[in-house]
Image (cartoon, rainbow, N blue to C red; front, side):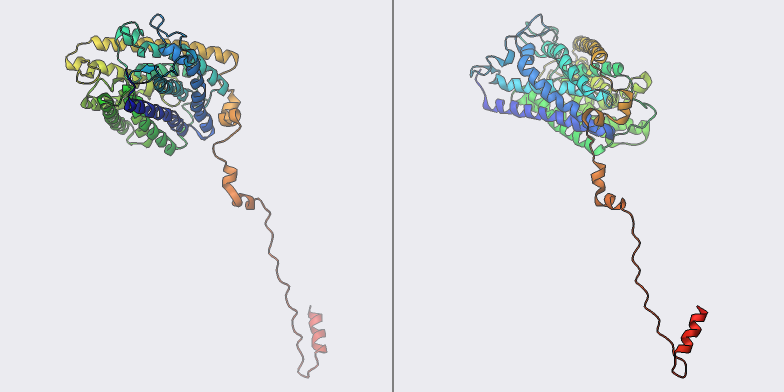
Length: 458
């Protein structure tokens, strides 16, 4: 097919939007942690940009989209993006490198999502090693299984099983959420969990991050159409309405259970809606997206509270939002899917039976178990070798200071001149010397006798 300029522009812009989501995630997660962990939390997202970018160019793209080996992984035919710079290297109606860039951003943000589950207590070196290992062992084969389509000769989930994942509910959110659960179990609970408040240190940062994620998610979902056409328009609308409905759904549950609607709940509800609509944005109608969003917001709001009952410390609710939200959104295809949508599949509520629901369930269960198992073993190995969990004293001191020798806010400089002046000794004011009193003369005009009498009195 010939290259279409409009499609190419849309895919490249969408790639940039998805790239923006990872800094947005850094702000979202950074605002939710305590002040002594802000920089480390943001660094865990930003370092994935650097690490996964290199992995993707060297081997990642080839292992994900470079042919097929056993329906579970690609091959090494396009290592280093070999042969993809030629003018004839076309993917659909865009240059293959545009597709490479777009999919690169998905590979970057997926491991970054996991980091929220282990806030405050992971070594930076351990995190980097985990990102490298998990991306190669889990993300590349799962993404291949879901998205490499080749008329029955591609990945087993998307091409053989025919499970639908339009933009990453299975490959991204269930995949990352299951790994997050494994890491939370391996690294254990934070010191003071359930006892100390551990409140978000900056809700404005949380809202900023949620806004950037919402904005970038249009590239995430609508960009997955890979062309500037009706499919992109439908997925764009579905993304917006589902997210709005999820905010309402989350706040309703929050109001019923806690009596207040919070800014943190609003931001979390938005992310829950974005997660849930990701796999199904091409399979449901806008009305179906509203229903999906309302339920997703309520279900995820309830799910985040289960960690206290089940006893695992998922610091920033990655399991409750991404694992549960991604799973629900994927299963919703089997319930709310409509043949009128681009995916062309009817779910149970549209007369399609339970077949698609079963395919969605099987795909997500297998991916979740695989990701959990590899992440659990990998985290154990890292912890036993180079160390993954911070030492207790270092955790109390703060991961920012220990791991990066920095703090997010310089309180000494903020004190400014007032702090310097308050440290100076206070000097008593100098009193002026009194002027000598004038001598008083006696009635005869001679003051000598009066002066002698005053001296005696003194």
